[in-house]
Image (cartoon, rainbow over all chains, first blue to last red; front, side):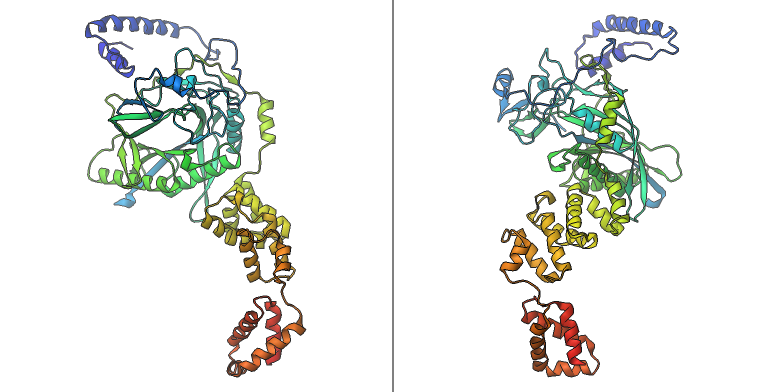
Length: 95
Length: 479
């Protein structure tokens, strides 16, 4: 896959990042390097190898179903830019 | 022509798992709390927090999987689904993409003509719910309540195999029955415990290729699901017949206007950039754990239906109705065992009980008349202590809290049926004497007047006479 400037722009838009036009070629080249490396690895013989979804050779510990959290709304909302009636207020989301 | 089109529907049903705490945090999942009082640092996605998986979601997801005959993912993994929306503070939802907990399976749904149809399930995966956006006016801003963020969900994805709104509703009801039977979810739709996304497309009959589909999101009642799908079908046919094209988009159903509307138009195509959740390891479930759950599986609605029909002799229609709700089925079974008469128990349960429950908007489990009390009432009809009419009086007295025992109430109010001929004979004679005109009609062959005499005797005795006996007495006196 070829990483063009427009691919970088699209990814930036999805991640809601503002990228300066002058940065595009450098970022495209960087991403291209990553993809090239992945492509190089594609040539390895993986016949009979199970894909791993996690590199650690361990499984998840589960926790009991118990409520252990207290209400800390006041504390959490003390760092929010705007709140009202217990709600966090954000710029209007138009549906 | 409308008939030239074929409808293809697939449903994604989000079922809220009935746990005390959230799927990745120890915050409460209780419904109706004051906004943001049940949203902890993990639910808010504050920096440095880590998710820890709630063990209670596994038995529930697995029980569902076993209930639909699915394969259980002995190894399941979580993934991140990335998108920006204010009710998703982390910027991603933790869900399962490549290795879900439930793979495959199927359910039988009932169709209007009494036949059944198999609908296959693609998969069911665990995920967290998002928060809630309140779009009322907060000085031109949107209010966010994150109490629901992190609530455990099982998303059940069907194959696109339903071909009408009615079939889709029947499928949704079947899933609802199953998850409530298995205590996977409380199934309370008004509190959002079961929400449907409907994927609808249409194509010319005989076409192999699926048409472009739309997804109508977050429908939270069976009635709205039917209306939303019906609206979507009509809308799509209108567009295609007038030469237009269907846009693949997400829509919302507006019950006030009975229409669906596009939800948000995105400049870029949806791309959730899934990748494995680095904060969580794979969850491994062993065979013994699955077998333990299998052993504890209760009887499922479909099995109950068959047993009610074949062993208890109910009609298909009654078996279907009573088995449709676990509370109702349990009530019926206790009642039928008490009176040893499934037929009468079924008549009373679907008649008086359901009418009273619906009138007072109660859950069957909270009915003021217990199934043992109703069973006793039926027993007293069967041993001819009371008539059916008096039985209804007793039922209502118990329901209104005016009585607390069936036999006690019969005794206290002198409701015992009069089957004593010596007590009934004088009353019958008196009524025959007072109504010579009817006697003449009867003797002239108009046997219908018999009902008049029986009615009069019943009236005289305050409904306590044994109607069968009165009938016999009147006939013998008149002939």
